[in-house]
Image (tube, rainbow, N blue to C red; front, side):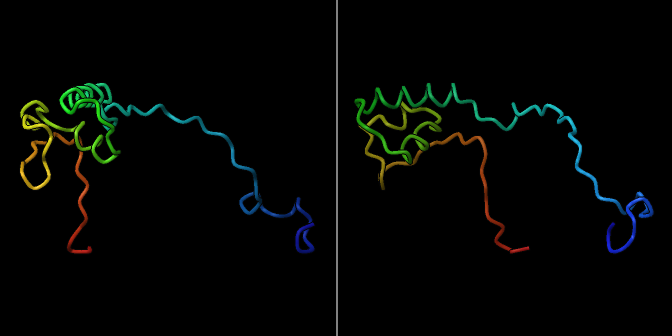
Length: 100
């Protein structure tokens, strides 16, 4: 009984039931997944140029997106305030400045 009404008299539309399992379709994620093999290869080239010194996470992310590591790091890796980097990012996220 629900609220004094027998369950048999409650219309089927208003009865609760458990959710059924629906199979999920396979999604092709190749267009949104970064090409990790290319990023790791580029990072290996950067490590050789910098003498295998330890890199921070920010440096790993930045250096793995370099367009031409040999050209960008030709002067021993002194970058801060002295050089422009040519990056090849896979995707760029920007904040909406108009707040719409």
